[in-house]
Image 1 (tube, rainbow, N blue to C red):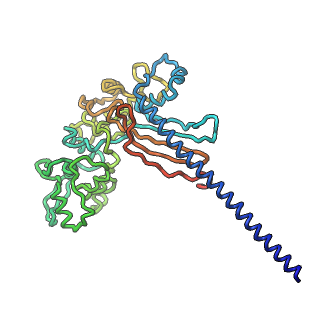
Image 2: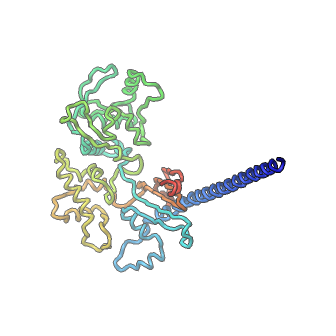
Image 3: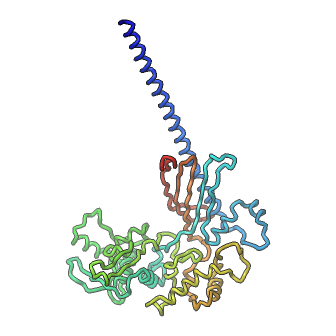
Length: 414
């Protein structure tokens, strides 16, 4: 009996020891996995820094890169400047893509970095004001109409007691209210002899009548807005949010009478210039350029659209001067080059007015904001960064820097 008890005790001790050994082994394995994860995560973080340096190498020197020449020695150029092609892309207005490249070409597990740089699209809304542009109102009107708001569409306006003050054209209401939000005076903006803007007094009366709590009250900034989302606080935009987001302007009307509009929020940014970078732009942006849109033909926009299609299309036709024929399109060098190539474009009757030269950019300048995307990967882990920056005194100055968290390993994500 004692022998049986001793045997059972021995077996029990052996079982406990086995469990302890397995536990220690599992813990060691887990710790090893954690150490590997931390090491790879730190490596990915270092790759972000490598991507930032690559972006700055291109940004700080793209303006000095040589122009394409028919007799150039590509091998010699590459030997002298590893990134000359990327710099040329950026200089010509094309998105510049670096990589993905191995950080250490002799070590396949060293991780890869990919960097993309492009000129930020969109108009600086803070320049579309009476102080920033003599044609500010005209450009706003063209933008709103091209997104679907009829020029003669009227809305009811009420005072703080909800008594009707008559009707205003929605476009006038939006334009005037934005002007009052950013200007420095307290006088409501008038359009067509009607005070259709909104200064602080109007908002105070609205908030009082609606019993809005103080923390939710927003008043005119009387200066540049820092975020496009701020438009949603402004009279007109707050009443018709679909102007910003897109949708049906008058959902309460009969379906056949409903007006569908496209949102304008993605037309803007709050930095850079209100000029249009013509070598990488959208139709909507061009439609805000005086001289491209035809004021005599605002009703159906046919002439304006013909001008726009010619500008976009002529880039794809080889100019009559020496260019790199391997490219799919060729940048406009300046306004003279644009007008000549548009005039020669496929029998088009397009004609660009000289005033357009004041609203078009052909190369990046001191006002240009660049979008930078950095994507890094190492051992199945990834990380990305989206940033915005500009050049000043040969230095890259960042105005936005947004990092995504380190991604999980691809195997576990599936």
